[in-house]
Image 1 (cartoon, rainbow, N blue to C red):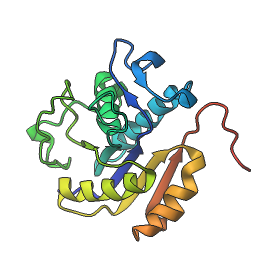
Image 2: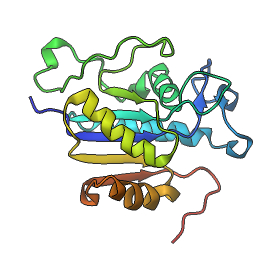
Image 3: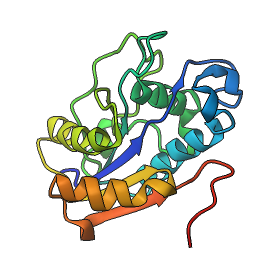
Image 4: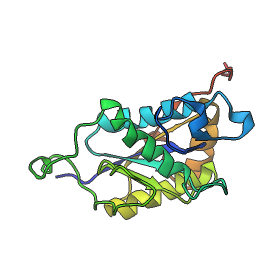
Length: 197
């Protein structure tokens, strides 16, 4: 069995606090006033990460973001993982691999139960909870991948706002010496952001 070699990073931008609409109602999110109306975009980022994970059996999805508000101990990354698990990964992922399927599916060390994750996470979903900016989303996710797999990633998929593409790829990936020809970027902008031509 090949070790995981593909790191999918979803950069956190807000905190989902939980609730019955599973992220659809903006009142379930802890966001700044200037981010109102953007929560469907954050959900779209998470879904895009889960979809990319479902398409590559050698991938690991890391939901990245630290604790950015004082009103809750939950981090952006942990809240994104909770949202994905609460939505049953939007039926994009197979159930947790059984011991019979581990010959083709890489396994990670099981994550210990976490008091802020009421639903167990899929074994190829990892939370990075230290990043407080986009550079740290990249750097800390790469080191978290190594901690989780004992290997460095061979390629990256980064999911964030389209308008952050150059910063995340050309600036941050270059700064950590990750080859740009092994980086894929999935950009999903919030409503009202007009892409540059």
